Length: 93
Length: 160
Image 1 (cartoon, helix red, strand yellow):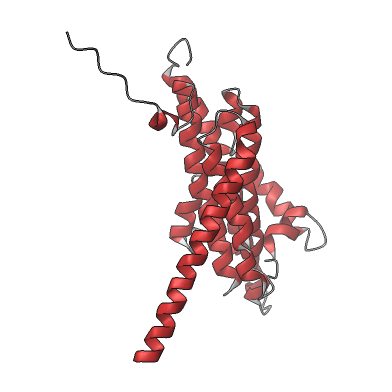
Image 2: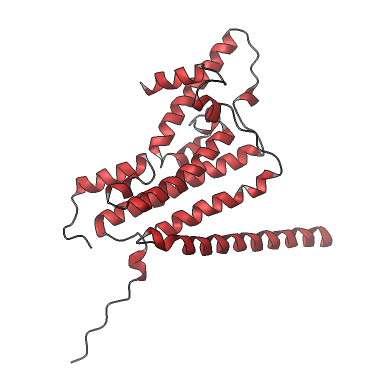
């Protein structure tokens, strides 16, 4: 049943069918957007991580924001460390 | 804490719901707010990843086996995406047999978009493992997965 529905949606072509528009033809990703895609993913990770420790939803916003910032700063430090290592390698080798 | 230990069938039901749709397990144990949070925070990266990568190669066990394994923790999304992927394969094959020239970039994303799609999809799948465990923990103990880690250790009985 679902296969028939999907087939009908796909065969509707790009103008027809939400699935055809969303998941059949890949959305173009601008080259400059690649690094920025980190931010929404980090927010999702921070939200799920904090939600798995929370008793109520009202505990989430502040805790999620702090976790988001923690992870982001950690990732930036790791990136800076690797960039420094990369520069050192090029300087001394 | 729940008054009674939940039955095994209840835990299986919660686990299956959480596997099918992110947040559905939490909804079943009465945590409707958290259910919405889990649903949005897991559905978003999955949908974005599949939209950027395209279902043909990014929900296919033959094209990308390990990514498919990482997506499997969201059964309710990955199974329809897999059906879409097989449907697309058949459609492309039919077009080839008619002698049409197929431009695969119409269906498959390549570097760098492919990397972003893989990371989003795999992360969504792994996040739902956390959501499933949390739903099971709340169904069994009435507490979040990690909450018990923060409980103070029971005090030692006073020495006689």
